Amino acid sequence: MITKRLWFLGWVVILPLLSAASAPAGEKPPARKSPPIPQDFPRFIVPGHEREMSLLRELYWLHYQPAGPLIPLWDEWMPMSTLWPARGDGDQLQSMRRRWAGALAARPINAEGYVRTLQHDGSAHAEGWPFPLWTQAGGIGWHFAPIGVPGYESPHATPDGWKLTGARAQALTAKGWPIEHDPRRKLIFVRSRNKEAP
Image: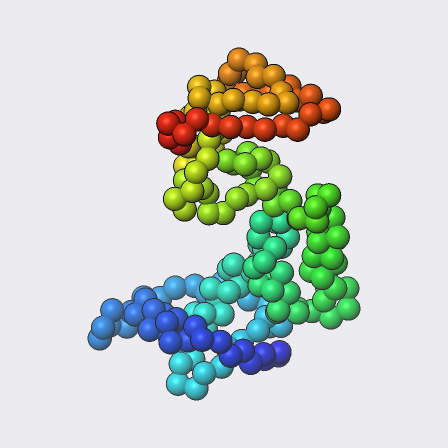
């Protein structure tokens, strides 16, 4: 049996929640079947709170079991959450480590050194995810076409009031506002002051 001791600040919040969820006041908890958890999965030991720690272990197992590398967006949280149990010996122990080594080594990085989050065609582009969105943070921006992701749509702008230098504007399309840039000139966008952001 492998026992790992973990210390974190979540006990104060988790213990009351698990205690409250385990049974109504004064009643025995209903019979339920615990999921089969491998012996080498970490245990949480807090004297006097064995049931709560057993429930916490089950909760972590239910989230750990199907987990692994996802899109880069989740890389800040998923490695530490899936590598800390360090399950098994030999090849089994190295399995999750190899999965993460391969995933992290294959992450696309742009020419400026940013890891592409590959979330979706959000309000910026498919390679990244601006957070918070300018619409959520009181910023200013313009979208010349729908982005097609429910919950991320912004008010649509038109080319009215814009002046371009070093480029020729074409008509607005369903995909946005096509601009032909003359590479011999600097590209400058100017919006009339009397035109407010949508």
